[in-house]
Amino acid sequence: MSETAEAFQKQPASSMTAEQLDQLAINTIRTLSIDAVQQANSGHPGTPMALAPLVYTIWNRVLRFDPMDPIWPDRDRFLLSNGHASMLLWSVLHLTGTRAVNAEYENLGQPSVTLDDIRHFRQLDSKAPGHPEYHWTSGVEATTGPLGQGVATSVGMAIAEKWLASRYNRPGFDIFDYRIYVTCSDGDMMEGVASEAASLAGHLRLDNLCWIYDNNHITIEGNTRITFSEDIAARFQGYGWNVLRVGNANDAGLIENALDIFRNTKGRPTFIILDSHIGYGAPHKHDTAEAHGEPLGEEEVRLAKRFYGWPENAKFLVPDVVYQRFADGIGARGAEARREWTQLFAQYESKYPHLAAEIGLMQRRELPEGWDRNLPVFPASRKGIAGRDASGQVLNVLAQNIPWLVGGSADLGTSNKTTLKFEGAGDFEAETPGGRNLHFGIREHAMMATVNGLSLSKLRAFGATFLIFSDYARPAIRLAAIMELPAIFIFTHDAMGDGEDGPTHQPVEQLASLRAIPGLALIRPADANEVVEAYRTIMQFRHEPAAGALAPASADLGPEQIRTRLRRCAWRLCAG
Ligand SMILES: Cc1ncc(C[n+]2csc(CCOP(=O)(O)OP(=O)(O)O)c2C)c(N)n1
Ligand SMILES: [Mg+2]
Image (cartoon, rainbow, N blue to C red; front, side, top):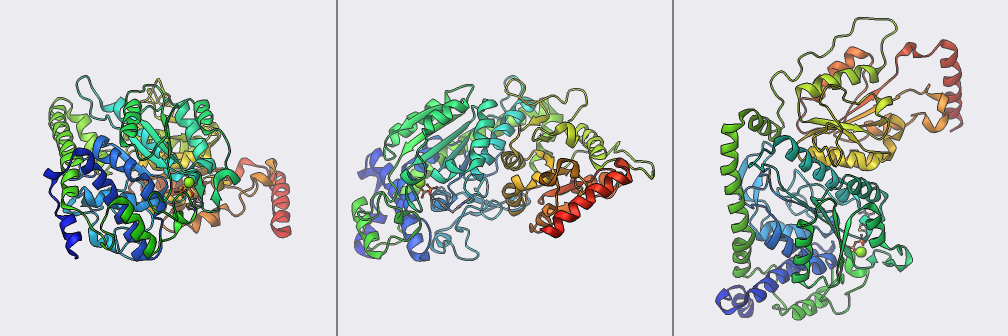
């Protein structure tokens, strides 16, 4: 290391103001991101350069998160829906010293992301992959990268927090009281799933949810004037969100004010429009599409570092005072918050042992004692009963045995037979956040992403629709498989003979396409008792999603109806 770099690394905090220390930390995130992308010779430098002040402010000033225990149940969640900017996350996970946890939820006592991982950004086995991957790197709350998925998943997380607070909090015991912060980009805002999810979040008045939109006017093909000209503030106001604007992404004070307003806003989610400059600091690349997904190039890297007042030739340099700044900020605040919570939970445990035990089981993805008692046994019958009828009966039993089993349908509850009807089941609405029936509306894609968000929050969650409409939800199902979440996807009307509705409603290729998703257990029970056993099996999954394809009873239709429907379907298949 050169003398300047070494002196820079060892500069004492005593010579600097608080603002200078903040700026140094922000520039550390920027330069780590730039160096990692340059070394990998691929990746996305521009957005981390622009959003470093935002991510620094959220993490070091606001987030209730203890790096020493990244799975503490009452932590705030941070999601990077613009997952291509993953270097933002790897930087803060490294700088905060966030610990690694294994699949059994044991703290391994070692760092989640090392500087060496960052040096091997985007390489096989590095804990700093191209996009954030839940289950691969501790501290990642959800896998993101397919634009729109992160924001949609966050709605499930916000619903989960409301539900958990409603079921478990008691006077003087706010056991669940956390917020969900999500960064997102133009691409997120253009994807349809974001609109479905935002509409649902506004309807449910999820005031624990904050999306921060990186309004940089740049996507891969250039300036968004060629693709995206809607009034996004009006759009989110229309959804019922609280819309704020921060006109300068470099002004950490303004960002902090906006986040304060979010935390004090009741009855609606918050959308912060943050005006930023992609590639900020790179003289030839800032505000250009090239800054999005290409390394800056050695010369531009040097110029950017000069602009930040950074040693031009130093690589992967972290000043000691920056680690200290994070330790004094999120480190101290997070440790204190978790310590208080742990004390509170100990008192809660002695006062409400049953509820505390439930929380413990849920956190480890275990099931309560007697979870499969009273499951129905169906008598042998030639006629049989429809898979969805059996499924409805089973779900209603399971949900009474497992208090944290929740779910619903995309407006087809009565057809999917997924409605929970037992006494006290109730509907999840803004005024009744303890309800077990979720009404997703006709939003299949956001529904399954929401189910993922609920599963990430340790609830057992299901979503349901017709098998034919699994196509509308497939990207979220695929992500559940990648994340290894025990989400449950219920698809009824698995019948070629469903010809009455015409070819648009006949599930011809959907089964094959779901079977092709690696890691998704697809079960197609042949009769009612197989439905029971299917549920008995999948409920025990801890790290694997399941989809059920449920057929009508064979005798639902007369032979004449079956003949005409199948003929029509066969014609469709042959004619392509
Ligand atoms: C569903 C989906 N489609 C396409 C892509 C490929 N992709 C990655 S980033 C991006 C757009 C980049 O623009 P923006 O979202 O505004 O991000 P920024 O460059 O401003 O950070 C695209 C099309 C993707 N990741 N996900
Ligand atoms: Mg953009």
